[in-house]
Length: 205
Image 1 (cartoon, rainbow, N blue to C red):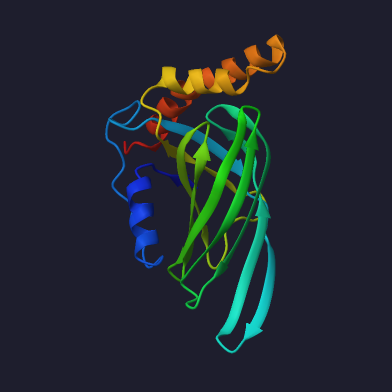
Image 2 (cartoon, rainbow, N blue to C red):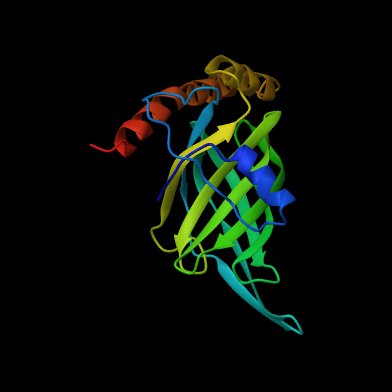
């Protein structure tokens, strides 16, 4: 599964509208970082989620609890869990997530869920290394994930440049041993190449 950036403004609009709709803009055309937004390449293994069902006067509510494994911005994810459920409508809902990489944790992780019948899309929104972060994961049917399922794409951030991203990673890792700091810095420095290669793979030929 591949996913594109340009999500943050639309996420805010969707939240203001009561999670009615999440719209996605067209993909960037040029190879390299999209203009005016710095993105982090992500690749996650998405195992099957655990499904829960609750009955109420408002109808059936399904909840999903899952985990993610992989990398974000070149840096390994050490722990990531998410939970979401449908709201009054089966086609919209939300939840929360937690994620920690070797460079730090995502704060205030929120999920917006939309279901179009044949596809469920989760929009993950949070704060990472002091700036906003947003990315999507989509799956067939009512949930994301499954055996052998991998999601990759570009997460939108508030970093103005690659240098600022690297500086934020270095600041977050400042208390770690020098060898560990060097390793994390080198992993993060791969992000620009990972983004470029992803865009090249995704570009229509």
